[in-house]
Amino acid sequence: ETRLAYVLTGNPEIDDASAAGLSGLSQFLSERTALEPGSPNGLNIDSDELAFYSLLYWPIDPAADKPDDRTIARIDTFMRNGGTILFDTRDHISASASGFSSTPATLKLREILEDLDVPPLEPVPPDHVLTKAFYLLDTFPGRYATSPLWVESLEEITARGDRPVRAGDGVSPILITGNDFAAAWAITNTGEFMYPTVPNNPVQRDYAFRSGVNIVMYSLTGNYKADQVHIPALLERLGQ
Image (cartoon, rainbow, N blue to C red; front, side, top):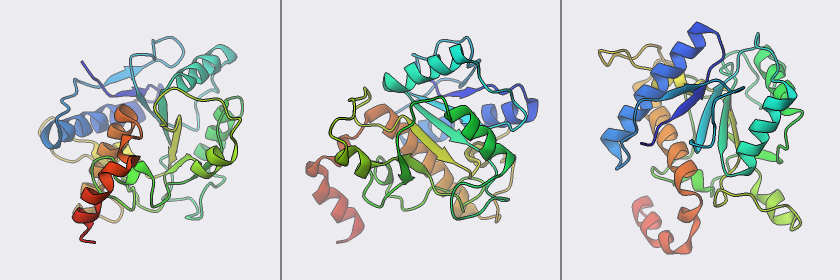
């Protein structure tokens, strides 16, 4: 059974939001797509098997300890073998809209990434598969809407012909946002939203769910939507 997964931080507030958020996204996926995920799993990044998952949601807790060398090696293996990690600093309400900043969460993320084989990154370009993996999107909001979604740079991949081929059908091994996706997706047992979007906008929340669907579909299906065979249908939907 396909399940979404999130990294446990040890902070009950963050972990509860992740569980509720991925439950909400799983429900949305069941209602809008052919995918019917099971209940999401919380993973201990130090010991739990990662290979069962194509996508891990990792909310950054500034107070968490940096993973040790053994755990870093496990994360690097997961990413090299086709897995994708969506890092969410959840802080863009207090960060600069120009990109990465010096917030505690961003500094913690840099600390985690410094020992990983992280490719060059760029904000999702307009022609990227993520913009059309299921919905047609030009932005990827969560609870906040000001952070870009960072992805492996396609330009760098093209320029560096000597780059080792990764598993995963062209899927970026890393995504980074500050928009707090899980809080936008989080629902209670009665189906109510747990956190307001900023600003409080139902359209933004709908696009947050659509962003989640595109990210999940991208991690599961790879870059097949980049195939030219899809261009006529996409142009028709765009009205061009």
